[in-house]
Image (tube, rainbow, N blue to C red; front, side, top):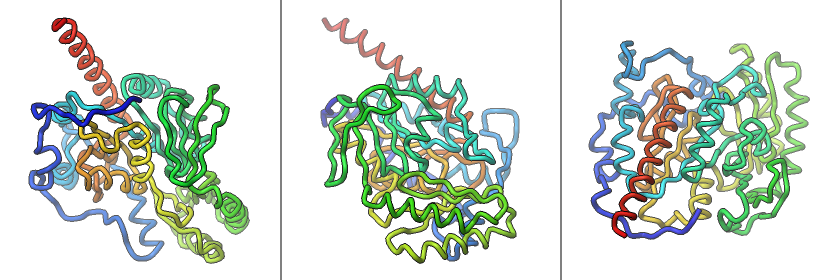
Length: 368
């Protein structure tokens, strides 16, 4: 997507946005810790009951706890002018989770279909700025849902990354990088962080399917570089059984580890790779990793997105936006309630970017 100059105009910088962010915000009690002891306890904490809330722009009233929470994580819609003011003149890169962010959370994972309206909005965003979808699902499954060739896709929590050849030069970091002609209909460049684990993942998947087949509602999904154990449709009294079955099989594979998502257990390789690493890799591929004039924006709803939020926050290099209708602790800076608000935010971002580009062309022609 082009190289980056490290020269940035001080008039576009708003130090309060990043440097003094923690001093600005009111910090409430930690309502949803990121790490807890005990699988069953963790499963319950990572699966809060959704509630209907107002984003503050309508006539509805806030839940008092949610109101306090939004003092720490302000609505990205209400703060939109502040965000784009900081992004003025910068090279913005957009990173999006899929489930719960671009599509609603549904009981059956295979039915998490993206609306045509959302697809059009995401396509328009990708035409204006480099846009990537980073999901726990396999890369092929995400593409089957999205069906847009303009995007970068990072499946299996970023362990399987695809981007059009010619858009960037992928550094492999000693891992597998190949060219492939796949469903996208054009040559793509593939980065895969853990190919040596593929036989192990397949074997673990088959064993766990057999182990959990008697648990009503349980679904085990092979996402190529990780295995997802969905318990959304399992009676809560049987959650312990799901965790125990997963643990029993996991004991046979010390090179695999467990993480938690939103009503899903994730089993993946024990390697130093996650969605945050994927963001860093893609920024490097886009020549934006060391760019002082870059602004990455990551939007996600899941605990697995916290690694990406943390990278952006710790480096004071961009904004994380958490999609949630319930209060929970996060490394994000802003919040949105649901995918409908994500779509509205992306619409505004695209419109603003087009206006900025038009203003820039006008100024350049005027100088000539």
